[in-house]
Length: 136
Ligand code: HEM
Picture (cartoon, rainbow, N blue to C red):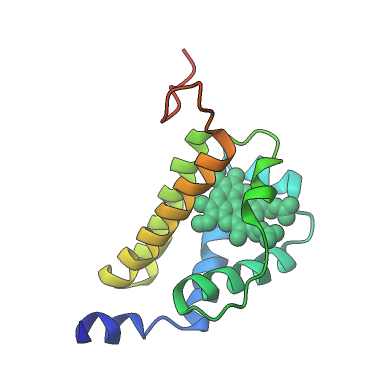
């Protein structure tokens, strides 16, 4: 218990900024994800500021983020379940580049849970199989 607490307490607002900046640089260079982001975001700094606050709320429980991510993602043109896998791959890759294994794992667990709940909110329909079947 002690160990985990000590390790996780080395997550700081600074390391979150670094993660967010590095991750969205990768997103903007990704052939599949970039078009969706570039269509929705014209001024990147406010988005990055929001994401610093979001991850600060998630990892440091600071309550800095106020918002409704599900509604924002529901209306994004071109969003698919498969793109979430790509998003998570880039996020995980970024964490591994920047952090020790246990900090990376702590971010990954949160990101995967939030991604799953966003996917359920966006794509789940009671009359269709879950997880969604790839288009034939
Ligand atoms: C396919 C995967 C994803 C895509 C294409 C995507 C795309 C976007 C875009 C374009 C925005 C800006 C929306 C706007 O300002 O109108 C946004 C906002 C946001 N995204 Fe994602 N996203 C994805 C996955 C995720 C995941 C997995 C998380 C969390 C772990 C996340 C967290 C957020 C948050 C917190 C915001 C800010 C919402 C607000 O305005 O309050 N996104 N996303």
